[in-house]
Every structure is written in C-alpha cells, then in structure tokens.
Length: 193
Image (cartoon, rainbow, N blue to C red; front, side, top):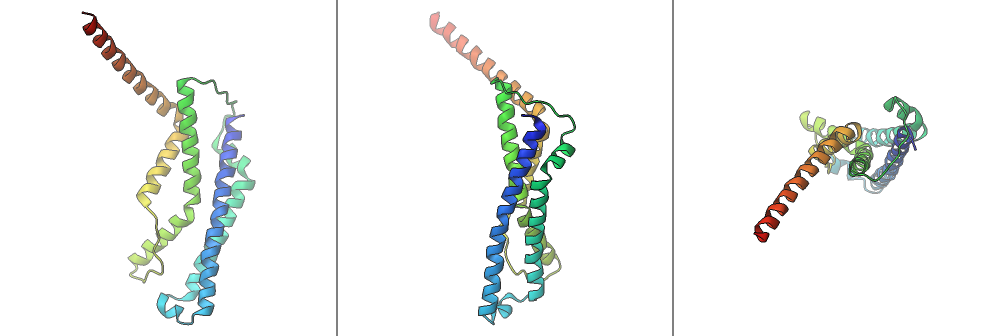
C-alpha cells in the first residue's frame, strides 16, 4: 500500500462519515416540516421566518451531499493533490513505526471527525452571526469550537508532521527509559553493598 492509497482510503472514510451526517439532518429537517404542518402555532414559538429556516436546512443537506460526493468519488484526485511523492508503505514493527501508525491512525480519524462535524460548525457560525446581529436564535447548537479547533489542529499535526512528532515522542521515551535504567542500577548497587 502506498501513502497516496492510504490517504485516498482515509478521504473516502471521511466522505462516508459526512454522508451519514445527512441522515441526521434529514431527520431533524423533515420532523420540523411535519411539526410545522401539524402545529399552526409553531411559527409564533420560533419567532423566525420559515423561509430562512427551510433555506438553511436545504442548504445544509445539499452542501453535505455535494461535499461527501466529491470527497468519495474524487478521493484519488484529492490524494494526488495532498501527496506529491508516492511511496510504498512498509511496516516493520519498530517503536518508531508503531508510534507513526498510532499517530497517523489517530490523525486520520480526527480529521474524518472534523469533516463529519462541518455542518455543526456551520450551524454554530450561523448562531454566532445571529447573536452578533441581535437576532433571535432559533436553535441552540451543541458544539465546542475550542475542542473542534484543538482536535483538528492536532490531527493535521499528526498527519503532516508525523516524522517530527514520532521522533520527539521516541526521544522522550528513550530519555525516560534511560532514567529508569539508571535508577534501577543505583537501587541494585545499594542493595548489593
């Protein structure tokens, strides 16, 4: 397997996660349409125009579908743009390579989660804009921007700087191991004396 093939696989995985997010949006969107048809007082409870409500839901669903389709069907093209030099991936189980595999797996999973949460980020930004314009907020968004930014930053760091991060972690592990070895030798010397 090459690094470009692995990146393509990760992009397709992220696209599938993003595509599955559509079903969450469909559920909430069509449930709200149903309640709108059943309960005529719903507009008074929302205090927002329904046109804006429908446009936002439709826009989110269409954007989500478009992005997930592009990522899934054009994964090779995106991977070729991200990975300029294609090389084979060979994994021999050394501590450095194990650290790299763990970092890459974590980074790719976190990037897939970040892509999956893009619609929530969009809703959160819409809520902030509405709050800044002193408009009524139609729905509360359960989204942590600090957590999203930190996780995405670390994911990008793990994926694109895996060599430097793994070298740093391996160096720290070797330092800790050497300190523990010295302490054990000192302890053995004191018990022998």
